[in-house]
Length: 394
Image (cartoon, rainbow, N blue to C red; front, side, top):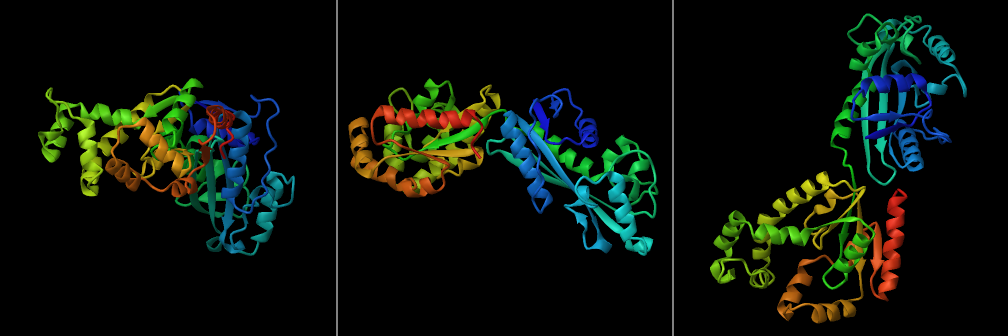
């Protein structure tokens, strides 16, 4: 994995590199990337600044970016300098300038009134909608004079709770173990261990809208498509699962060879909502497990989960963005009748079990209107595919 640090602060870079030392992570900095973007910290919260930096660098590099914004919150100063910590003494202020201003403001404050908290917010972003935010804090107090030569920023003035030394008097290893940034980086490490290799897009649409056609178009563009229905069919062929289903729906759903006739099963469940829910309670957890497995094994940067019930089943938690295929109601009905062997009762049951198109559109990030020519649909697919590959999902 390549991870870009969204900072030009070489002291921060040193600390982060030390804490994230891992052969599986290749850390890149502004020195490795020409024309590194300008990092502007113009938000009024640490969270806001960290997000702006992480997103900007991720979109510029098309790689995963890690940004932090850190603030020192001094109780006697009402939480100042806070988000303004790096420029407490003014724009372009040095560490020494900021330290001098802090000491001058606390000159008459006794030691017991110098309680302070270091707060670090870190954001991991791939620039394409996948993002995680973590926070680390460290309690302590501000000492009367600068002590120690290590560290940077306010480290010579901050004495962590339970220690008789300042951050600047600790080794980097000791500091990373207890500091605000060290604690945040521990959370970052756990996130990166589980960070998906692929962006996952949920492709959905009601029966007759042409979702399968759109899925094939993405496959033509060499996008990996995981077909949920296909997984469900394979599960029904497994002996253990087949026995569970037959125990509920009886052997009337089997053919002469002992295999489940999906048409018969379908006819039963779409006439009875409770039976459909029962079947889903058996298959859906197993389908999710298999889908996650396929995502984990994928070597593709982009994976599409093709699932008509993506939203109905709550599988939107598996994806980063949702793409819905729609078509007018009259076209939808005509396609179902022309392209399937569903009975009128089955069609009614399937449509009743699915969310209305209007609801799916509200919850989607992309919409393909599959009403006109096949070329128009293909153009829409191509346009979305280009956005996905450019990392412009956000």
